[in-house]
Length: 330
Image 1 (tube, rainbow, N blue to C red):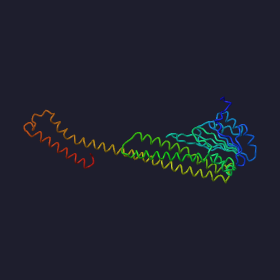
Image 2: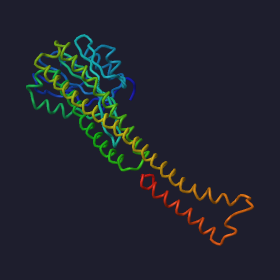
Image 3: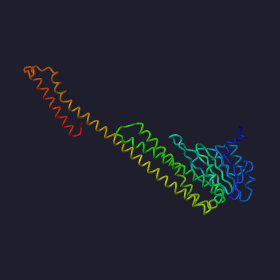
Image 4: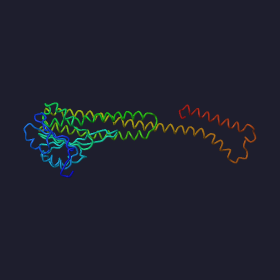
């Protein structure tokens, strides 16, 4: 494939609709002519298109060059911008691949008679969203605004099972925290989980500003009767962020409790060592006296000197052991 070509894999579908009813799939080159029909809008879905394909869509939809430049680049921040009579929306998509959270991006162009999505990175295809909307011609008759709502709602709804999976993972790690044994691996997983919660929150939080902007400032493209649908997305994001914040707070608290338990366990170990050190200090001091060069040692003149001395040391050690045991040092 050359720079002046594109593969069919980059085009997921390009479909024309008339008054909410599906007509047929069309070619990229026919988009301009199709849009001239009254009551018709085109839904184009792209996946990681090259520069040539984006230039073709720019020409057919009459898109702004800055928006096309952004659409060709991944790693854009979530945002809402208006270029003439076209809205440009960037959303972060999220997927769990194994136990790892991966982010992708979806760039959307919403015009008076067209809707285009550009996907980058890991994300689920929006074919099911399109099929569901096609089964409701009344919604499709409202035009691109309902297609934009369907995709945004799908992206936001996909955050929730990921948040649930992260919360379930936290509950399992929480059980390991309170087993009474310190595990470096558990702490590392907690930090990774905390990072993933933050990443997911940062992906979802900007949707609040996007939906708020769609509701308040773009009445020309978002009719009043359609604003309630974006307000519903807004409410979903608020509930999601509350769940994520609650989980992060619980995770932070669990880590602090674990550190406190580790400190308590270390203190107990130090006390036990100190207790045994005190017990062993008694015979150590007594027996070390016999290593000095004294001329007169009482035990040398008595047959019972050493047994008595050993007995006294044993009694004192046992008494000290019992006292320390009573106070919880051993």
